[in-house]
Length: 241
Image (cartoon, rainbow, N blue to C red; front, side):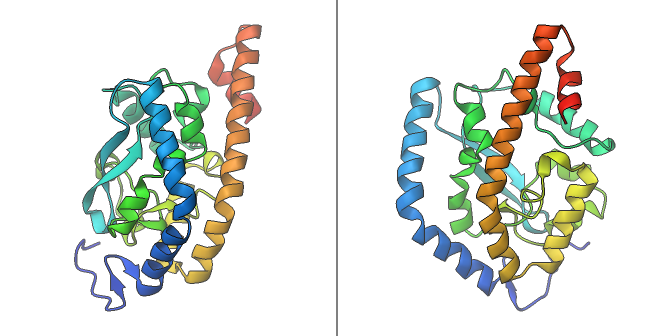
């Protein structure tokens, strides 16, 4: 893969014209809904946790280009990221489902942090990344630089399109898929994306988030039951999965 050498005249910044139009149109039409919601979330975060409202993190976008990805802060300030790196490395090398650390409980989360992350509301500020052309509404999730460095050439093919807020993986039972299955879904989207596919994924996103929230709720109940029975939490989650 030769990053930065894509010569398709129909693509600008990794997105066909119809994709850019769809992104901007959807954001403008839904602004009366997401703007007040964003203000509300910002107020809640400021109330429950000292520190900034937003969290800015460097991510890898189109053709491996780095950009600053915005999120609502859902963790304590200066949270340790080594835990996530180790967990991610294990997922990349195993054939296990890509359940998030949140499902088993994460002490780094602020009050309401799990709720925001489960429903994807922490990613609402990324609409600004979409407007800037660094992301799209639909596409593979932008990975972290240390994750990209561990990618094989096949894995990096997911970066031949703009990263997105939602995507084929997110609407295909992401917490039940392995790392390699995620790559397959992302690469398929990157090579086969179309207006119809984007519209379908956008339509499926809210039901997928609701299902994900129910899965997290079930996982928490399983952990509580495991604690009552004296079992190890990870065994309880695997029994429920």
